[in-house]
Length: 422
Image (cartoon, rainbow, N blue to C red; front, side):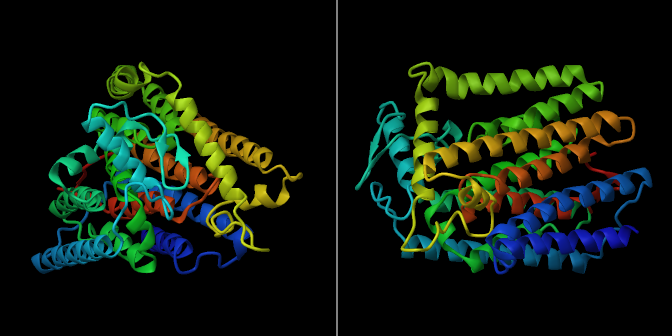
């Protein structure tokens, strides 16, 4: 049974990767997202049952011969070199103009905010691009880390790449120390994504966000509540995708009879928000969050309205998200109204997912394992959240892919016959 679950998990992870890359839209723009969603949920569930069986039966990983460990290290070194080579090539081929947002405004917006902060100017004010003006809506840790890159004179894309590679190497060394020879798998997934389409890595900084989530889902299953809370705080202060899932984390701690940890965790998150967002920025202009949200809503409407001739919006009908349902089946010609309705759908589906997960844990709390369940629930939640997002840009799915890659490796993660994290 265990071997069957292992093979199933590998198959599901490969299927998810292919559904986002080479097999994208294989079942059409309306049905493909459903299969991708089912695949993502299944990855979380199969991972949990593998972990549960391992812990209950005290299954430990056999120590691998040195040649296997050296081969694993060789794979990781080779993949790291290839990733760096391709990213440096992208940087050379696609230089970024700070005020040219004709392809993407992600890096230009980040650069402007970083330069404003370094010049002592409040970063949250209107930015005038070449053809339009925009209000920066990025949370602080989505752009503040690049202050260091700017000081060092380093391209932001290279900085983000090195950060994710550093996170992967930290994880690789930990898993290799435990005798696990598959710690290079996340780097392989990254390399395959880069081979499929390099443009998202040329014009976005998603590798930094992926690193945050990669480290967080690793820490969430560990007993170090401080590391897990820091990870969640960084994720919330960069891209707040997990904001509806965080209460589930607290609920699980409470039901697991760990109220002190829950209080400490909540206090750390509150302190991070206060020191990094509220005091330096929100206290100076309480409207920056709402203005940023309003701008993104307008940008979403513009994306839904972006058609070429009789063709439908490319990013809405790319086979990765269900936003195409709202576009096609909501009645009326007012696109702003359709977007508003889909925002409501996105919110309620994500919230209901969290409620179902919380209810499931409450009912089975005496038999469920908190650590693996937290990881599983986060994977399920992210799968739902990204599938129902208003604009399913392909680069966004790099985050759930990295989470899946870690779960695949982590299912084998043992040390000295015992779990490293549980």
